[in-house]
Image 1 (cartoon, rainbow, N blue to C red):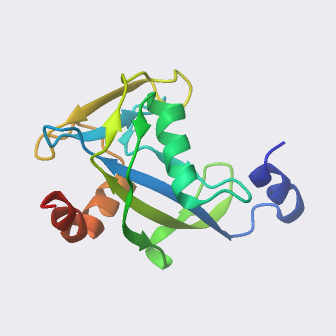
Image 2: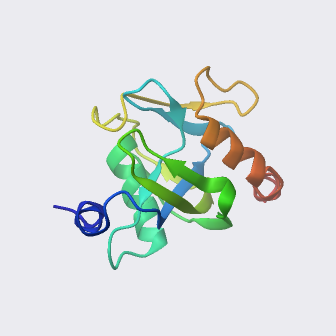
Image 3: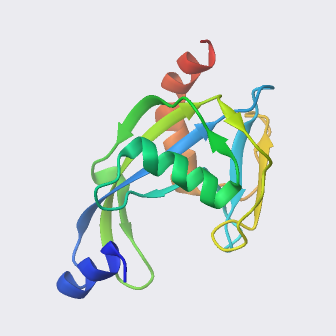
Length: 154
């Protein structure tokens, strides 16, 4: 049983702060990595940080597990948090997401969906994103747009 499951056994559905990471990874042509989850929604790779894990290690682990590629250099874009990031899951669990957003254009390897958390993965031109982008990811990209634009110029 994992950290979140253990926590939920103790506190039930009460709201908690959960810290996660996401990576805005770009290939050498400037396209952004997106992954399609089993519910048909497209989003950025990422997930929750495991106990004792650094945010950088979590970011690299999540991208590798879900998309099969390696991430090298990561640059911190922003940390998103607050009331706007409240989530209530269908099972009743409540949380406030604290998301560390990274940027990377240092990607290598072949894209491979893990078939569990990711059923399809690809790079898309930022102005031609697929239908079905997660509203949370749209908000995250919008809230990070200025910072991501600055990183893209480097």
